[in-house]
Length: 612
Image (spheres, rainbow, N blue to C red):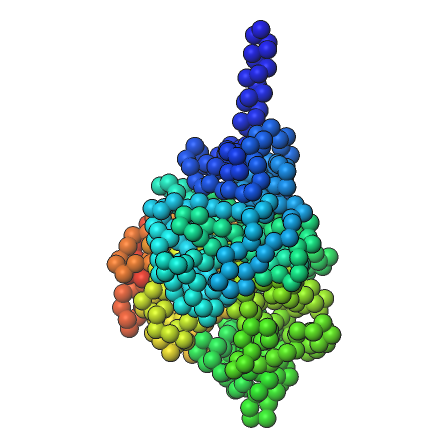
């Protein structure tokens, strides 16, 4: 009898463990069609599908081990583990830092092309997240280019914000369409970040539509019916803020690298003309100034932005490319995707849409010595855009061209599958100082939110570091701006300011920019809270870069526990002086700071050479 009792208890324990992450921190409890997710026994979120998951605990788990290298990103060597379960059409993986699930061989579903439709008919691919009223959240209202704020709120009942994509609202007048990622704090110190990953050919991306507390996953428009073998992965990163920031779950579930040779892919810092001169790329002399700045600061790249096909004074794009190459700078050039904003938009246009034109254009780029292309003005999350992006990535890779998608959807793991994708915009970034005055007062808080939201899921071409003003002023400090170059991860890090600004900074600041990595071996959360402050540590080789910003209008002391670094040889601290005439305080501290007091909307950077 004792043996039978022991056997039954062992079976029960095995069944309970089968619904846990390998490290035991995350559990998933099935109830009918609902998965109740917990982190260290605290309720996180309920996920409901059209699949009966009540037998999930009886499924035999399969251990999934992920181990791969990234060319760029928050971590060079990525590893993770998951327990995988198959329950009907549902495939569920519970990772150490979240869960990912998808549906195999889905039935055909409806589509959404604008805010008037209510989404697909519920079936086995239907997914709903319950986000209770009162739950702290940072969510962006959906727009085609994902260029909006992530304001703090505790309710879904917020008025819609107009965007280039229109207004999406419920019958009650509240916003009802939301983009990824969505950050929640369902319990104090416990967070969940909702997104998706691994869009494949023939699929569209999705977003969230809500009816009160229920947020439905709604796929965008597709051409024809669903013919693929599975849906994209629906992803929920779960844990502390450190777990959220340090997670690589989006690329963990993406398809492995499709390229045999990646030796030609080199992340780097870029000299960029648009922020100061939004028509500067049709002026050869302005382009020369940015090439010269790149040469002086030892930056590897220069981006020649829109309108290079209309260059004045008898010069051509070939002349500009040749000048950059003579100076030892690798040029990148801009294209209009000609699928989104076309009429009234800058060119060049219609050069990439047809396969034969795209092949010819990219072959021409390769022949001239162009290192990469920035493709702009897409039109949302539908299948047409997704397939087009995949076509661009494949064709660019054949011609050894780097890719930067602008006016485009968020990263969903393609940066692992196609490592020539080094950056994506999909962020309300510094170029908005060129457009409206709204950004000025909100930028500091917004900047302190992005490390916990948008930048978690992939590279982000925010275009940081402006010490002077564009059309609208900025009120963040010099050290805040410098910190953004480390705080914001992007395989192509475009510097926003004009050459004369960078070249009149103290030599230590210029040296910092000259040596700035654009890919990281390791990333660690140090301290912070969305919208208030953010302090991250990123390592390149044996050098640590610690960056912190204050997102508030009051002075603030930011915690900076760096004991994980251990012994070090030297450190350099860049901070604000508070003096407008001499804004920098640059020191070489003999002891690493345990905290740093920042000016309102201020920041700091500390470079630490660790002992090998």
